[in-house]
Image 1 (cartoon, chains in turn yellow, brown, cyan, blue):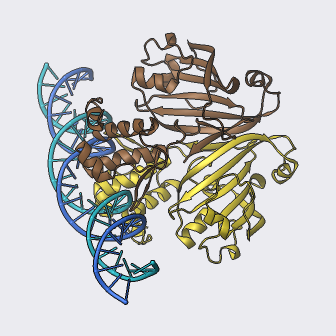
Image 2 (cartoon, protein in one colour):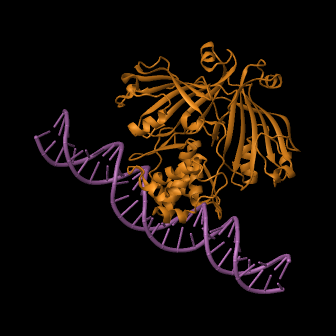
Image 3 (spheres, helix red, strand yellow):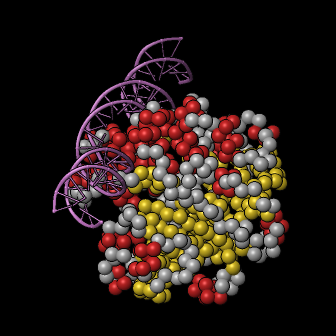
Length: 245
Length: 245
DNA sequence: TACAGCAACTTGTAATTACAAGTTAAAAAC
DNA sequence: GTTTTTAACTTGTAATTACAAGTTGCTGTA
């Protein structure tokens, strides 16, 4: 399929620069462009996709920000090495972070509506507390080995039919994006190295008191005032967490 | 001093958007704008600094990328302040009472020129290997407690008098920026939760096999082809690592 | 008073034009 | 054949214009 055709059929609701970004991103991730390759020049992209340079540059800026390309004046946009570890420190859900690996998701609990926990690990706005919390516990396995034990908390605001959706082998980020048009724009995270509790050790199939990585994340979205939260325990014995900044 | 005067006297070699970025950045960090405040609107900044919107927006984009502001359509640019520093480097306490944390730096080794280690944790370009490595081990303490054990590796290329500089209580990033005009533009990092070796445990004053966080970082700069490296061990018993994304 | 609607803001997207500056390879000079 | 110069690329910076879309507060109406 030609770039241009694929470009035409992308979501018409998205801005132009975003559509181009999506196309280029998928091409990089799918190996159409390989590490070290040069992307088509900005002017080429302009003519191929019928855009102007500021728009094309906006799309490329996003790719730079994501670490997928590096630009060099006078030369071009160079496709950057893909992270070999698990990229969770930047804007990505665990599903994208794991890429094409053999990822399996196992639901432990939920999704179900319940009250927010007392002394929640991030301060909660009052409207969140009133409307309750969609709670979900998931285990992420790579090649059969459990790597992440993930507890998600979403404010139960304007997410119709959410608890009836299946999340086996599906990305939470993608579900939010496709069904609710919620896109992740950023967030905060805290992390510690802690000894595994017996419960965590059980989930991650390691010995109690072995070091695990604990992340608490607040994830902001394009819905004004809508953030959700995640508490994540990672077994880093075989895979490192990676991030770009 | 008026914004405009301060703006005039900034480095004439920098592009306009960068100068505006520096001014706004320092104002945010110095508390001229406080958390939650709105920056002047883009159009106001245009007239005050004699720039056009694309240029002003470029400057604001950098601040967004750095996490210093958040923008909201229809409203404005909201100062987000909080952790300075890049990526995951900033420290925030688990207790709220850490505003007066005092950071102390203790040099363990170096800075000195030596050969790069065999099997370095990131692949090294050939020119780096030939010119050798500026090596430095530092211990960072907060309120007298050791938190970080940091090993830095810098390519020994065009950094006159570097090994004679004092790094007690000084930031490596700031030194590079002020004396060598090297600015950090991004990088990669990998991290694990590992049991402390006896050596690491000694430095961090914890028991061996207690969990510590291990980061390996490659840090890119505005000098084309110049990156440096850091291997970092963190005691996260009392303080979490925090980051924005 | 309460509310609807409008006006005046804000940022977001996008085309257009121009020139500066770094890179590369072919052409010209030696 | 080797070196130098040049021309044709590349991305970087920046002004200008226009409209879309979200937010806020004021104003006129009920």
